[in-house]
Length: 174
Image 1 (cartoon, rainbow, N blue to C red):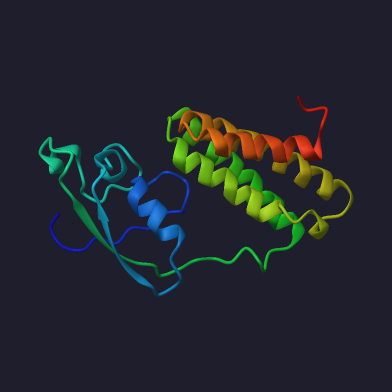
Image 2 (tube, rainbow, N blue to C red):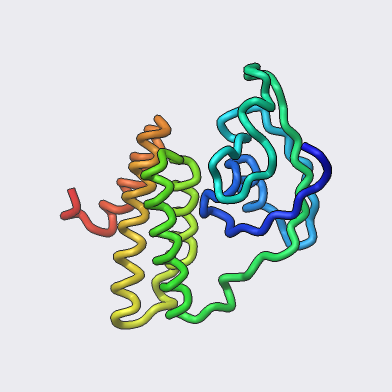
């Protein structure tokens, strides 16, 4: 790839390759990271909304090839400052993105997307009345979707852990 490229994207939407998406999730504003990727399936971006110039041909057919990304995170909106309605709206949007990622077979990103929803609405005490019921339903749906993703990723213990958590809250959900 020739020179730096600026890219604007929403983390977790699946618009960039998995390596970049996963790295940016752990970064702070202004932080710089050098990401080295050796898994072709995580590094290619052909057909994604934001192409960073990494195509499958960059690997020359060799699984051992590497791609380096030099990433600087410029913006990262904080969820903590959002009110209950905005949190529910964001959680619903993230759940929908997770469903799209599932349809594309991008199980790891989908799982992380659903985990993000759990992080946003998991503290039910921050919601009251109908909002709490909505948050509880979003939480349950995303936990069960995380279990599906764990099964597809052959993470058997993770799938069981998530299902056990749902059953503790709703024993009749068997």
